[in-house]
Image 1 (cartoon, rainbow, N blue to C red):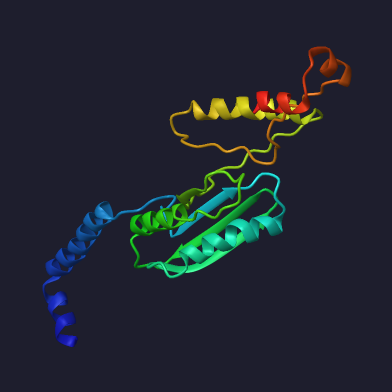
Image 2 (tube, rainbow, N blue to C red):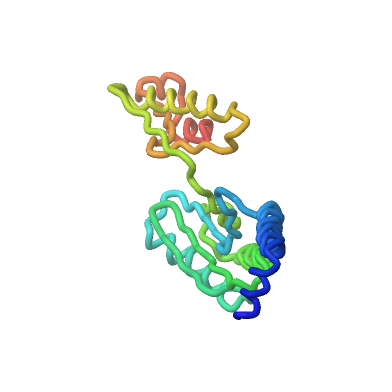
Length: 205
């Protein structure tokens, strides 16, 4: 160590060369470094969603969720299964291992669910997709002394304006219910036109 210090004291130019070399290589390494303000995360979940209109949570679990979990049990690449049963709706979360091929597991899960032929009558086709991770950049709160319809209208217009900006790729509206329509028919009109509620329901559907 003493000889090294003595060398740089005697030949000062080499100390400057070493310092600028370290600085130069540092700049080169910094320019080649990969970085992201919002790091992208590889999805490691597969979601199976099933809509069962008019079913209670117990019916969703027994008629749909348990059958899906039974068919997925033992598939290669799956680490854990968790599920949620609610009214009219059921979800199965498929957590895959870190070393598994996501596309292959996704295909295996779709094939396993498609093989189930004992689902209750009336359920909609299961929706299967990989979990997409998103990072929230900004939250905007819209409020005022008005009804939910006007708030939703204002929020959707604001969303359209944001989406028109080239720097913004995605905007989601939360906290407002979906738009619903109510159709009311009097008994007198039903008799007048010789119609039933079932006929009106089928026409709307």
